Length: 489
Image (cartoon, rainbow, N blue to C red):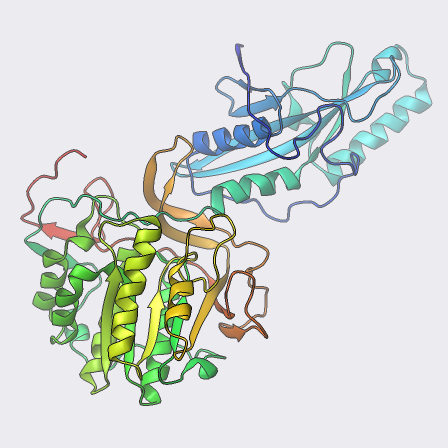
C-alpha cells in the first residue's frame, strides 16, 4: 500500500495555531455528536482538497492514503509532557462519494499515548477496565473498526478518537458560505432561433391572474408610495422571486404604481418593455429569450434563472389586470467594481427622478444593496449607499435575506480557481439563519445594521432555480431548436 506525502505550506496572516498545543482546548471529551450527516453538493475530490486547505491554513502537513479517500495530518502535542508519558494528536478525514456531485466528509481527532506501550502485561483488572471502556466508546461514539488501517506512531498506541464538528463547520463555511459571482459582459452561446421552456404552458401563461403565493407577514410598513426596497441575494433560488411576487401583489392591491428593478443589462430595457406589454404567448416568450443575449450567456449566474423569468411573467400579468407595473433593467453589461455600482445607481436614480411616486422593488447582490459603505475598501461605494445619498427625500430600505440550508444555482470559483456554474448547497451564517418556527415574512430592525440593512426577509429553505437556457453539456431546462453548434469556449 503506497502513501503519498503532500506538504501543506501556507503563510499565516493573523493567529495561526501553534503546533505545540491542541487546537481545541476542551480535551478529548466527546462533545456534541452529529444528529445527521451533511451531504455536500460538490465532487468528493473537491471536498477533500478543500479540507486539506483547512488543515494547511493551520500549518499542518497533510498526506493521503491512495485510493481510500482518506487524509491524515501531522501530529501535534497538546501541552508539554515528560518523556515516557507523552500524548500526541492528529486528524483523520474519511470521505465518501454519494453521487457524482455529492459527498460526505467526516473529521476525527485521534489521540496517541506513549504510556500505554510501556505496559507489557496488563493485570486482569486493567484488561477488564479496558474492555469496558472499549464497549462504552463503541456505544457512545463509533465502532473502533472505523480506524482499521490508521498508521501507527512509533512508540505510541492509538487510544481513542472523537468526531471533530468544529473543523467540519470550517469545511462547511468554505463550501457553502461562499459569495456568488455575477459574471458581467460574458460571451453568449450559439444563436437560438426557437425556444420551448419546460413547464411553460401557453394556455396557463395567457391567464390574467398572477400567482401571488402565500401572504407575506410584516411587509405592510414598506408599502409606501415613493419608497425603494432593495432585497439582497440569494438569486438562483425559487424562494426569493416568489417572495418578490408576493410583494408586488401586495403593493398593487394598495393601488400603488410599481417598478420591479432587476439586475439585467440596461440595454435590454426595450426587450423587457415589449414582453411586459405583450399577451404572454409562447411567441412573445420566445422573442424575449432569443433577442436578449442575457439569457444565453455561456456562464449564467442566478440572475437569469427560471424563477426570475417567472417573476417577470407575474409582473406582466399584474400589468394586464390594469395595474401600473414596470420592469426595469438597471445593471451594466461590461463595467465592474465601483464603475458598475455607479452605472447601476445612475439608472435607478434617473428612473426615480422621473417617477417619484412609484413604489420600487430592486433585487441585487448582497453587497450592492447595502446602504452603508463597506469596511474592506474605502473607495468602494455600494449601489444602496449611492441611492440613499442621492435621494434623501425618497426613503430607501434594504433587506438582507434569512433562510435555512438549501440549494442555489450560482457561479463560483472552485477549489482550482476556475469559474463553475452549477447547483450548490448554501448554508446561512449564524446572523441570518432562520430559526425553526420563524414565519416567512419581513422583520424590520429597530435601527439599520452596521452593513446598512433595515430588516430581514425570511424565505425558509432554499431550492435551486437553474437558468432557463443551459449549455448542451448540462441537462437542459429549455429545449433549443435549430441552433448552430456552440463554439468551444
